Image 1 (tube, rainbow over the protein chains, first blue to last red):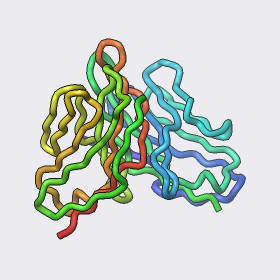
Image 2 (image 1 turned 120 degrees about the vertical axis):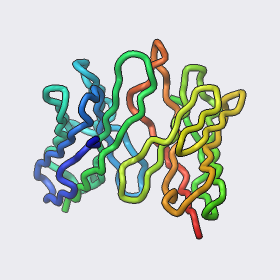
Image 3 (image 1 turned 60 degrees about the horizontal axis):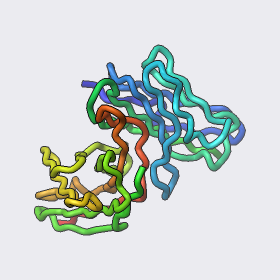
Image 4 (image 1 turned 135 degrees about the vertical axis):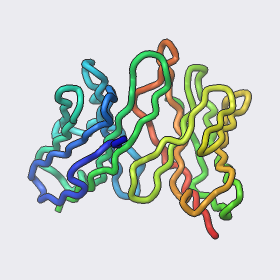
Length: 116
Length: 115
């Protein structure tokens, strides 16, 4: 079946502009995660949505970052007034997360964001 | 979640077994050990996970020591396509034995499989 998809695959933007990154999770997955990976850095958790619960925003680095998940499916990560340090690969993942079980996350290919 | 320690890099000859160690000495009784890998320019890929017992699937085997303070991921017959960064992650199990929520990635081990 279809995996996690992300768009765009690459985005180049000027410093100070806003950007929106999109994630389409695997159908039926109730949990959705955003991570980012900066050059030479490990993967850093940003935000986590689970069903109708309030999202875990504990990883968002500043108030310029926000995310929403409409209809329990597609998610958009928005970065306002982008800075050069926002340049990174932004990865989305989804998983099942209901009832008992240990649920692995399935990652998309990522969006490479370059802020010039 | 407990912290993990992995060697920064390892080499393995194609066709041989790759044994990737992970130390998680502060692991709690309700924490799972997960392994993911990231091939260059791709998103991470789930490999295997375990709690106490050794586990095996079509990709790999996971050996967890009796005291659970360390584990080893085994790729029985490494191929060039197994060259990747391998991440060992400890993740809490929620009430009822479920396990979901964010993953905390460390620096991982860069495994290079050579001909």
